[in-house]
Length: 335
Image (cartoon, rainbow, N blue to C red; front, side, top):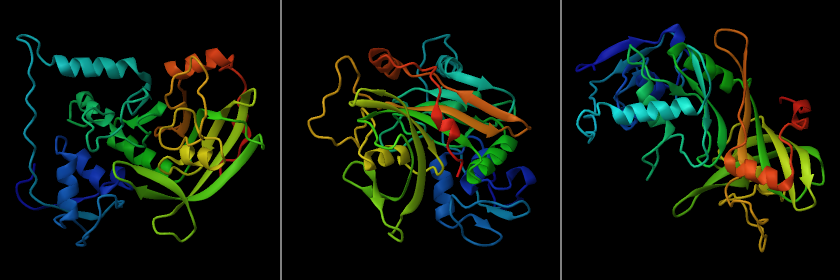
């Protein structure tokens, strides 16, 4: 850790990396809150100017690095002779949910209910767990996108700085292809369609929620989703395949509610009064990040599929839905 002011040059591998992720990669062990704090206080400069944590860096730029401090490691209480038992348990868990791994990338099958990143009141999250996978140089795997806490399925993680930079560009250019499966209330009148709205965040007492907004509203972002009905269960429920073009917070959940077919088990956006959950189904969010296909940082394509999580598999069984059925979202445009 630098104890005096230093200047660092952004390398080609770091081109396009967010400033806060640059610090995270260069100084493993530095707390994320400390990184955010020194940037917001103006102690960090890029080419001599103040900046924001999410600002993107360009190769050749100069970053002013202030004196930094490592947070004291949290003490672990372990039985005698246990060693790093907690770390080993975490590593075993991550291995058990790994769908794909090579030298550069890791694709995890994120369970429903596990947060991807920390927040108020969140103590256990995947980003924190990745600490146990540091390599010999102290580099830790890095998240390149997010999933909601209650969404299950494919989560892509970069294991190297090179992969993090390449994948960040892929997601910014929207060349990452993502397919989600959901079980929704009712049956959309149009079997395949495009939902295009503006979304803005409303902060409520103990939660934030995305509302449909107008172009020009403060904080409003354009959001586009393609959807297709895969199979119907009478007129009560539909299995829907979704392809988001943009990646806004709660986009799929807000969009399905907007067209009158909210996702089953959604605590925020399911507002149909007197709606009865069919017997035997669990009142949990029925949304799965089913598939992710991206250009691999070293060439070729990475194309990974996640299985239905247990609560959705139970619902598919109850409704007689076949997960091997052809998915018509394949034919939806990419833009």
